[in-house]
Image 1 (cartoon, one colour):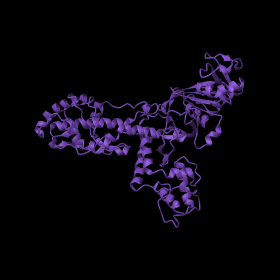
Image 2 (cartoon, one colour):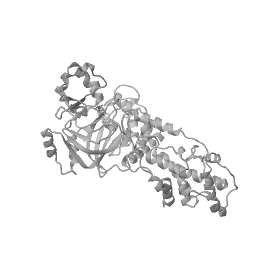
Image 3 (cartoon, helix red, strand yellow):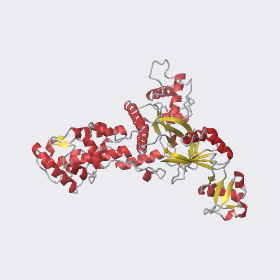
Image 4 (cartoon, rainbow, N blue to C red):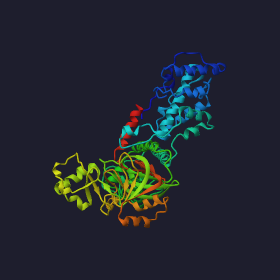
Length: 539
């Protein structure tokens, strides 16, 4: 985001209607309510510290409750609370926000006059409201930026409630700190941002550069640069005397493995093309990546639930969290690049044992129709039946498939069984995207490092373990009991009471449970779209 060196007083002066001599303390309590009321009712724009008009329509209720007495200024200029507010807003970069959006230039002095002090008071209140919204709910609008992200904005206090809280807070800096999300994802990313800014301040890391594969026994300046990089990122222990820093030894190999694990790469300990590319990403780019993910973390619900299921698409990973700790982890397969799995939060309301697969219309037209044109009996071997729109079964041999096109008037449904595309268990959280989690017969795909092969639904590596956990509060379902249902071969829905929160997120950077900063490739190119959206908000 671009800094704007616009002096605050110059901005405020653009809205002054009257000028009075510097105010005396005796007149302040009498004159300020009228000055505030005039500023709020005049309709003239109040210019905030970033040079933009600030909304004031929600402030009248708060100042009416205070009988027009200011919160941030007194006859001498900024009072102690106002100074504390300005100081905290200058720290907005701790949260990946640009302080220039909230505080620029010098605060008003006693010589400013009553009208200028009134405008300063209102500008500060409005700026605090905007900061509270930005740090708690985010600055970008997910739905406008990306149709595959459905985010329900967090509730936030009204202007009067928030400002009253600021007025009554015994410790204003603590009050402002608590405006930011408290979940572990957000706090962890803020820690990661601090670490990588420290690396940037120290000059960043050297580029490894193109060249042959580096492995045990390799020597040269690229090895020295690699060692320095891994020391800066904490993948090697703090520097000590090394006899040959230009030589690739076993300790360096272990450091490369740690780096590879943090970046979702195959951890073989050697520097090939993919590892070199990740090493040569500049620290500034990593900082932008962390800031983009801080914005995503602001979109998460305030209450994640306990327990809850979390799927991080960028990591191809699912975990179940209970009492703040992961109790179950597994790999997942997500949507292909052109069939993105959407990001949203919902509730798993039921599990289906031995599910039917109702073939989505897009798959029916693009993949199954060509098979039917070649051989009307082709789908029978896959246990897929052809049904009318009303659910009546039809003999596929009775249809002239050459006349059927995009207006596909039939339903295709695969029977339960070992060949079913959904496997033996389906986890349902009804949503507008028709996305759900399920078992799969294609187990080999879980061994791939990049697992984007589905049409948008999420295939889970350990469906039985997940089902057992989710059903434990519903009558003591054991694994054997679930297996007996599967073996019976019949479709059986099992309601979860209460339903369990599930969050499908897309974090390409986060702080791991072991304290390491994790990065993943931006498979769906969502980071770039988010950064562009945030830049547009700042313009």
